[in-house]
Amino acid sequence: MDRVIIKDIFSENLKRNKRVRIILPLDYDESELRYPVIYMHDGQNLIDPSPFSNHSWEVMATMDEFYNQVGGVIIVGVDSDNVYRIMEYSNDLNRSAIKRLKSMNAENIKPEADEYGKFLVEELKPLIDNDFRTKSKKEFTYMAGSSCGGNISIYLGLKYQDVFSCIGAFSPAYYIVKKGLYEFLDRIDIDSDFKIYHDMGTKENGFFSKIYFNEQKVFQDYISKRMSDKNLMQVIDEGATHSEVHWAKRFKKFFLFCLNKQLAK
Image: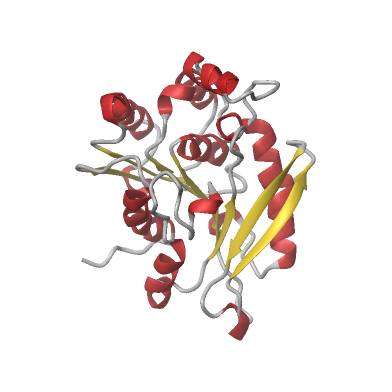
């Protein structure tokens, strides 16, 4: 059985092709079961190493490690676009992000979070639910990502609370979207059963580590006033950098948090 299926999809909302990687559980071919689904950003780094860190998220290893404890899960990874990643993963753009996008010769620079969200919810999820044995209700549908992928997980997860019930934001780059993100959060209600996992390393990115860490404190202070403790999980990873090697380790905590299981000591 090939447990990784790759599909190329043209998104009408984004007007560009998106590569999607569907990672199946151990027993998919041998069972008639339906499975929860985790949608993840930067899908090219979930199993294959990132060229920036030489590490992957090792999601299949985590799925298999906890198979006996939680059962099977389908992970749907959406590859990021080399040029338009920041735009797709942002509902707002600060000056530094715009400057970076211009240096990459991006065209029509603007936040594309809403278009990317429509791609996920209106184009991709119906396809996945039709082609694979999923548990399609929101109680079994989750989202996760790192850095800008953490930003978009917070934004789209809370925008589509009728679709997703748990999100994971790993080392979010809050500074890029800070103003627009909090303006959005101020306008919405958060369902009493919605769950958020968010984390940060203490040595994220050299000079910017303090900025990352301070913004983590701001988000925790804000969101903890809006949600119950049982539905909110914050992890501070001492000495961890902005890298898949650390996200892979912390992914286990998010994985079991969403699936309502305690991490074994």
